[in-house]
Length: 195
Image (cartoon, rainbow, N blue to C red; front, side, top):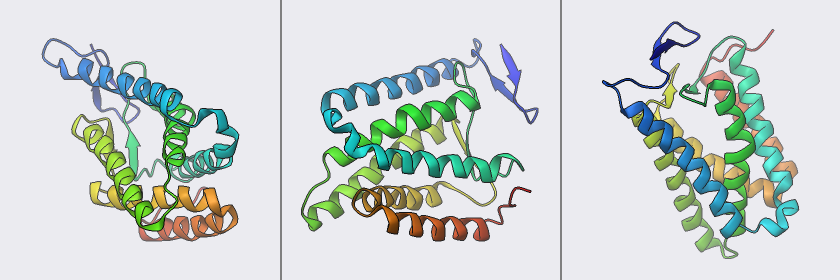
């Protein structure tokens, strides 16, 4: 069965005999969420979740602000595409309230104490995020718009991990730097401000 998204583009809702990839993509996405939840529960420092809670809120608030700036004018730089069970709104909620908290707890649980190990760890974490996004890009679950591309995403993933670390240790400077970075992206990509 095929359906139309908000812009009138055809997307596969359940997939049909000519597109079994849609069903595999659905399973991959659900599997990814389950793997993150189980990994966070088993490997993350879940007992000390309150320690990570401010950084979880910081990341969620930043993603909500991204949505605020781009949704009204439909000026997305990147967009999670709809599929079975995960329409755009549900994808956004899963990302904010399941995926991000699990990633943050996992990342901060294993953050090394020594600077030279932190650099390697940050590169590894950003590479994992880029790998996940690349799979999403290849399967059509994320699209890029208005000059954004996968290379921008790689840089953004590095920045995202660095800002998580900065916020964990120094929240106020992280908010100041976030404001500057947000202003840069709004200006550089000509994001129209909400009225």
